[in-house]
Length: 139
Image 1 (cartoon, rainbow, N blue to C red):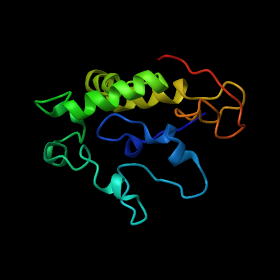
Image 2 (image 1 turned 90 degrees about the vertical axis):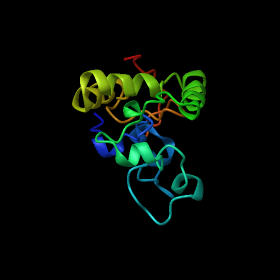
Image 3 (image 1 turned 30 degrees about the vertical axis):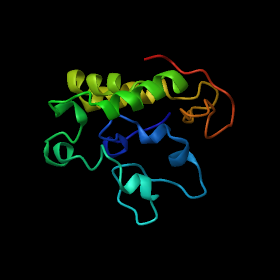
């Protein structure tokens, strides 16, 4: 079963633990919240991660902003809902309402491969451990 940690949840609500870049072995990304000099420029300059409100709020998440959800988050959320059946805005609302621990528990169940217990890649809908296509639970 996946075992996600809070550090893997980006300010925008993305669970970096289900991202293909995190799950791959070559040129692995360690997530939005981990500083790494080899990160691509677009990651280092991420508008949401570098937002002044995010940098100064207690939780480190976008939901504390008066502009939540901002235009950029709405665009990102729409792309992920359409292409990958995952909503960053819903993730953030879940965290805000039920807490990070409940969210992590839910994510562990949602993204677990039913065949082998590995982690399903959100971008390709395949298990990073066994390579099988796997359906995901909606919540």
